[in-house]
Length: 130
Image (tube, rainbow, N blue to C red; front, side, top):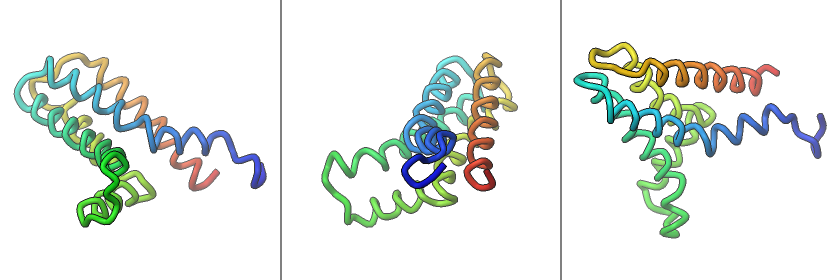
């Protein structure tokens, strides 16, 4: 690994962090919203809203060509906090909590989410210490 050939694991981590994680959480949360009941549905809805906001913060300023708004600055700080993991964690936490809430259904959603979360944390740890 040198300057012109970056580590492939880091490239995968950056790709997952920037483009794949929030849509993945959004899809899982929407499936949970559609089929769960009571508290699990509300937590999944919160996860879906946060994931949608995270996607919008990344995409909408480019569409509207608005980069100097205070709202865009706040969204950029939120997306970049904790090395880019705050937005990912804030979308994943309600979905993770919905797996323990009353009214949950489809345990496969929880398995997929937890396995993907462990993979993301492993990639993040590798990016820090690898």
